[in-house]
Image (cartoon, rainbow, N blue to C red; front, side, top):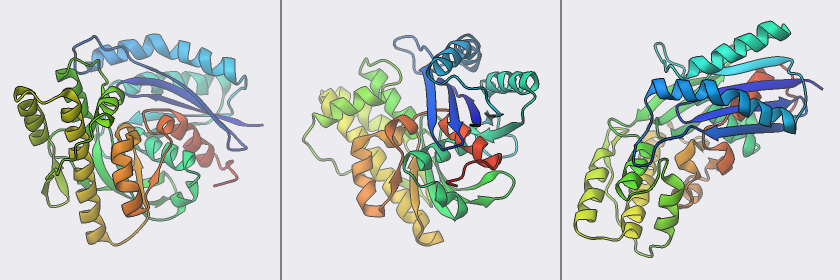
Length: 314
C-alpha cells in the first residue's frame, strides 16, 4: 500500500502526517513552546524550535505507522499568492526535499492554507467539494480570510480572497485577551472554557468595511470590560460572541455578492463550540473535526495523495 507523507511547519505547530492509498490518515504534531505571558514567537525562534522538534514528531508518527512514503508533500508558504512567505516553512521544505532525494520519490509543494482546507474537508468526509466551487473561511491566529475556492488542475485548490481582516486576526484577538487575563499562549481552549461558564448574552456589533472586517475595536472593548471589573467569564464570552458575529456578517456579505454555495469553516478558531453553534445551522456549514481544524499536516498529506492520483475516494 502506498503512503503519502505530509509535512507542515507553521508558526506554532510542528506536524507530520501519512495518508495511505485507502484514505486513512494518521498525524502527529507538537506545539512550539511560548514563554508564559508572551503573545507569540519571533520567526527566528519558530525556525529554531521546528528544527529541533521535527525529528521527534517524525519518531512519533513512525512508531504509530511504520511505512515508507512513495511521495512527499510540504507546506512551503502561507497562501497561494505571489510573494507569500514565512521563514518557518523553510524548515519543512528542507526536510521534505532531503526525504525526496534520499528515497527518490516525487516532491510536491502546497500552501499552508490549502492544507487547512483539505484537512477540514477530509475530516468532514467532503473531499468531493474540491471538484466544485465553494466558500471557505480560514480563521486562525495568523489568518482571517474568506476564500472563493475552485478546482485547479495543477494546484488542486485555487483560492481567491474575497474578504479578510484589515487589522487583527480572530485568533490573535482571542490570544491577546487570554494573555491579558493571565492565561498561557495559545489561549483559545482556555478562553472557551471560561466563556461557556457565562450565561449572559451579548449583542456584538461587528465592524465591516465592505466584505472585510476590523477586530481591533473588540480588543479595546475587552480591555475596558477588564477596567470595569467585569469577570473573566464575561469578557471571554463577549470576545467569542464578537468573533462569531463578525464571521457571520462576513459570510452573509460574501454570499450576497457571489451567490449561494457550500460554506466551509477551517482553522483553529473554527473549532470553538460557541462560534460553531452560531454558524453551523444558519449556513448549513461544513466544519472539520477540532483535531483537523488547528494547524496540522493531515491536509498536506491528503493533497499529496490526490496530486499523485492515488486517492480513490477523490
